[in-house]
Image (cartoon, rainbow, N blue to C red; front, top):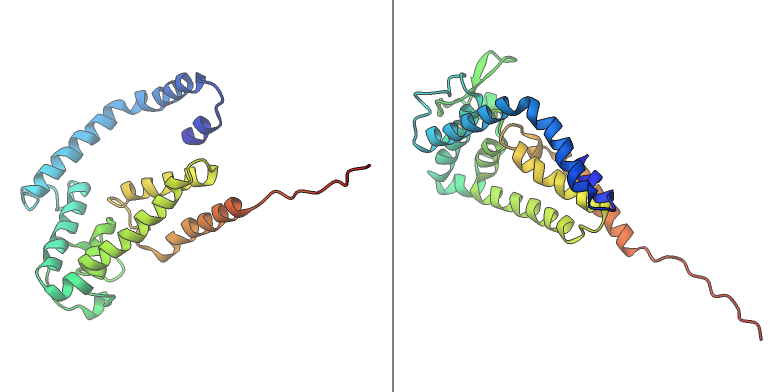
Length: 211
């Protein structure tokens, strides 16, 4: 909403309006916001130091759980050359009988802790299902799509579509939306629409000149 508001502003008053709107949104939640930033920072520190087994991953801190969930699966993937290229593929949870991972999510539908199925983070899915090479290829498509929007930022649709792609990378640490096939419906539809607009030529008519 703020991006479109800025886009359509014709004067510099948008700067004041943007600051005002942002302040109205941020000030009431500022203590919560700063607390979450501090928590996220400490979460990264714990995961990178390998201390998540002593703090947070048992459910007290869901963000640490997600990071630890992805890190454990990354380490598992890079431990084998086959998994680096192909991951585990799309093996169903009930066919994977190994007790490989310590960090796992509880599946209420089965009553068991999932080894293969992902937690609330897209990167666990990428590492496990696609492997490292598959993840790189997937992200190449993602970055290429975002780059197309970036090259066409003068187009309203491309501007909003680029923000859509950017925000979904941030959301990938708490959701699995970009892993789903239906995620690509919107980006590809927007590409087709932008291309159609770029290739459209205004109709012209030749008026016969008298005399």
